[in-house]
Length: 203
Image 1 (tube, rainbow, N blue to C red):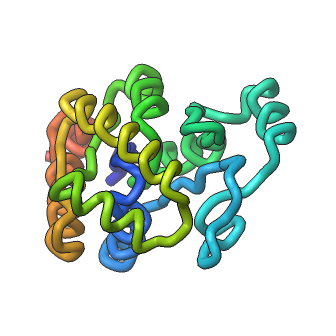
Image 2: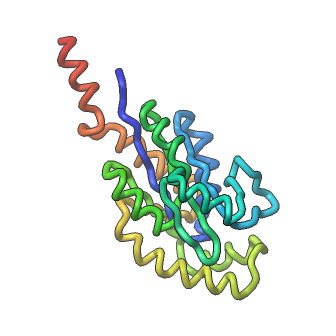
Image 3: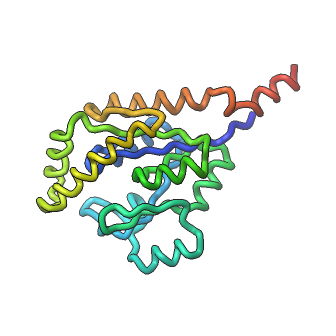
């Protein structure tokens, strides 16, 4: 029986723990595909090109935009982030669950292009916790931390646009919540019309 693909949007402020959540989720859910975004920012010490992001310069990024090879993009501060289009469409056609880790700006465009997409906002327990996490990374100076916190407030206000929110206080609980959302969405009737038809035809 064939199942339609499921597109998941995961957004959240910088420091909310998106990468950690996706790493743990991938260990639990073997059939998911996590889209790798393209970015013009510099990699952090622990990040690998082609695994965490595709790290490119701005000129390359703009060429991809002009050739319509980027599904959506957003500017976060002075840096650009974008989602390569081809892998997403291929995985969905194959019936996979595809997760896009994207910013609030990009999520708005994805919802317009893929109305059946399911959006999840990863919420920090508090702004103080978020600030503490940013400081522990030791990758931003004081001005950058202040700027990211200001952006976070705006992003959290827009969390009402999302289908679900998950508080990332304890990682294991947050991963379980997201896994439960994915499983429930997979069972929705409108996503399984072809399976229902197959059952009826074989009655």
